[in-house]
Image (cartoon, rainbow, N blue to C red; front, side, top):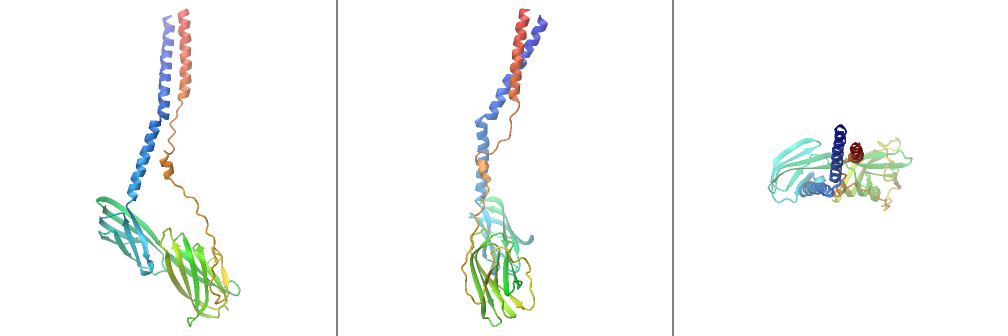
Length: 317
């Protein structure tokens, strides 16, 4: 009889162990205090990030035609440190400069060259040691001519090294005596290329000037510039386009000396951006910590029932 009593007793103890361990783990998994702790930690990290972003380095396009940029540390009162700047990945100069703004002399030909500018600052800002950096892309300009359209002389300008451009383009054609023989204006041009086809000019040398007034990059500054290039026009010889001229901003055609056109293009609606901070502020997706505790509960209950039956059976025998 004693031999059979020991087995149900051990079974009973094991079942109690399973039942006691399961609910504790499940409670820990769904405990709102633990979840709130994770959310609070994420929000704290986000606040620190925002505080660090209060002091930042920004390169401003004051006037690239005068070959100068300016780097400024925003929201800073006192700085001590070293400024270093690079052109197209090549270090140009490094010097100690204890003012919040730093002028960057440019070595390039406006329109002909495109330059990726990078500026680093290492030192102290208002007593705190920081490392700051910013990048700026200086656009290039490519002007082409072709007479591939029968009876037309076409000029095209393409902006390179940037991703966005919107504004008013003008093109003016002057003959060898400086007389304006063709001009055209198009407002609200959204894109990096602009082209226009005039009726054939007489053979000779012409100066073509493109003018822009608008915004480039993601910056809010208004940019204005003129860019000229001379072309030798000979309509007895076919001139094919250097690249596809039939993209972006549909070509316009006019007769020489037709004046300005105010035709506009429709700007596309910006695509919605993804805000990664939204996931953080709502606590994010917690890692899956669920286990097979429900199965353990069932197994414990079965073992408990088995132990009780065996115990009563042994007593009755």
